[in-house]
Amino acid sequence: MTKDIATPMRTKEILDKFGFSFKKSLGQNFLIDTNILHKIVEAAQLTPDSGAVEVGPGIGALTEQLAKRAKKVVSFEIDQRLLPVLEETLSPYDNVTIVHSDVLKADLQATLTTELADVSDVMVVANLPYYVTTPILMKLLEEKLPIRGIVVMIQAEVADRIAAAPGSKDYGALSIAAQYYAVAEKVMTVPATVFVPQPRVDSAVLRLTLRDKPAVQVEDEAYFFRVFHASFANRRKTILNNLIHNHSTKEQKPAVLAALEEAGIDPQRRGETLSLEEFARLSDSLYKRLP
Ligand code: SAM
Image (spheres, helix red, strand yellow):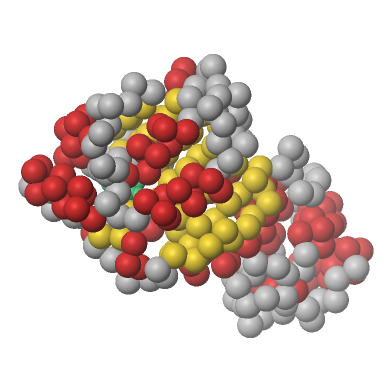
């Protein structure tokens, strides 16, 4: 029986054999700690009937653990140099499909339909490339894919922002965007020593459990997203000033004030104090006046 890929020794052997050099620009920090991998996979609560979607298999450290627990794994890798490596390291597993593609350009809906048609549920599980954490998470959430949830290793600071509650310093547009679609939990923080090479930032495992329907009902979803993004454009400004400068014009101030009043929100408050429900009310009352 060969050793797990994610041990320091086996990883080094694989990297040496293929003469692999890390590309910082692709966020290549590989996991070399099987305990952490087990915790990530546990957090995903997979069953033998589950499907798993991975972003960035690297040399297959996490892919291997997913292949052992799930019925089927589909993994997107952008770096062509890793394809022959994965071909070899994952050869003991017949339930893994590697897709050579930038996940941001991939048609995930189509891949799920063709590759994961016969699974009970789908989880996205990944040690994400940190340079594209937010675009990847937003794509996964916004495309309304038939997935149960997402468990990802990301920068600790981003995990804190996503899981933040109103009123905290980390709460902002990203918290609202993610929490609109999912329940967010920080599962654990992870030291840099479990990666090779070690990233400069702290890491954390985040779990997003998708909601059956969004956390709040709004008249127009795209408008709601524009309203809360505008509300956080300048964190030191009041909600009124942010809206006047980033959502409407100065001339429309009376309409903005009326919308705030109707939504029961003091114009002097800051965006970071508003709950999702308050943003939803505000969005609907602004939409009536300034569609
Ligand atoms: N899963 C491996 C592990 O845990 O050791 C590697 C994780 S490493 C942090 C991120 C991986 O994502 C790398 O293999 C990198 O080449 C790949 N990657 C970077 N950008 C990508 C993109 N846009 N689409 C798909 N894969 C990408």
